[in-house]
Length: 238
Image 1 (cartoon, rainbow, N blue to C red):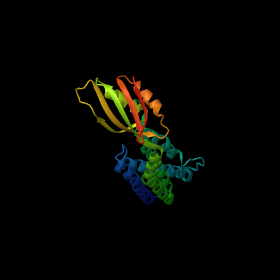
Image 2: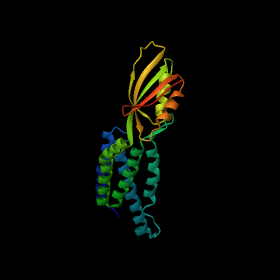
Image 3: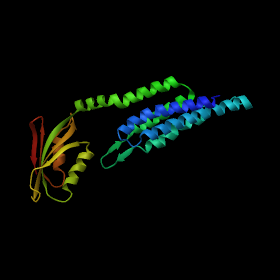
Image 4: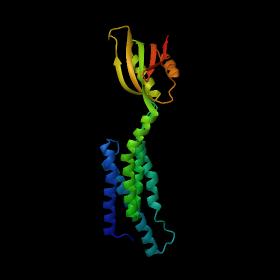
């Protein structure tokens, strides 16, 4: 059985390891931060310790040979899924999802707590180090890959100066995963038609003609011009 002193040591280690992962999420201002990750790791470790001790006690005291030391701990894996789901935010209008990495970190930190509770301290420490590396250093790799799969393009639009026109345009950008980097109005505020310039972050395989056709299909858009790498691709007018 796991003694009280050893249980306390494992719980303290779970606090430290969970805190390392939680610190990185807290630094990124995520929905689940330092305290959440510490509590998940601590609770998982406690469940594993109790699960092992109950199984061992039933075996030595009552002679039960079918005691499962992982029965209580197994519920952590499914239970932590509800907590992870709470960190995922879905934007149905923009068709985007945020918080998947934080939800995954909660799931991993629960596994780390179980490993600590089972007594595999070196394995838990190594796993925590790997998770910390993935959350920090791999961010640069992710940004590098994004830069090589996406590029900026400049759009010139002429639209009706009507209520909700800018909202329709931004909703289109969000719905088609086009990141708006800059936006500038060139015409007077009281003008009947508004002339704007926008810079978008788009994928390399963007079809300029298709984008122009869809923009011109928006209500109130009169002209659309897409410039890419200082070369005019398409100019259309209704």
